[in-house]
Amino acid sequence: MVRISEFQIKDVINISDGKKLGVIEDIEININTGRIEAIIVGGASRVLGLFGKDQEFVISWKNILKIGEDVILVRHRDINEIKYIEEK
Image 1 (cartoon, one colour):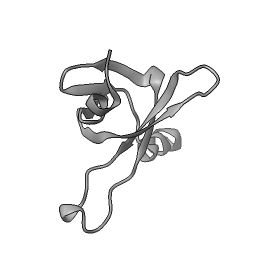
Image 2 (tube, one colour):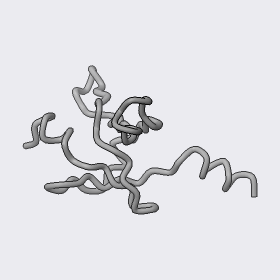
Image 3 (spheres, rainbow, N blue to C red):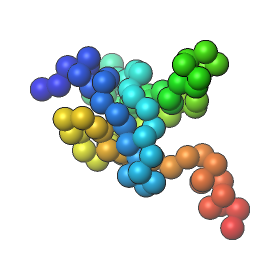
Image 4 (cartoon, helix red, strand yellow):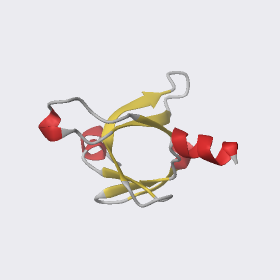
């Protein structure tokens, strides 16, 4: 079993490009089933957190590939990347 507090300190890594997306800031729970539907990952803070944060990512539970001791591996594509692929 994993506590939410332990879940939130793990780095979320995108296996599509190897980049660190950030850490889990929130989760979406389906109140009818009690299951986690998605995680919300906040981007890394800019300049000591003074100027806000980068984009937040909502990652569906089905795109979480592995939860390890230190990291969570996910498959996520950036919206800009998807638009670029569609424009070809």
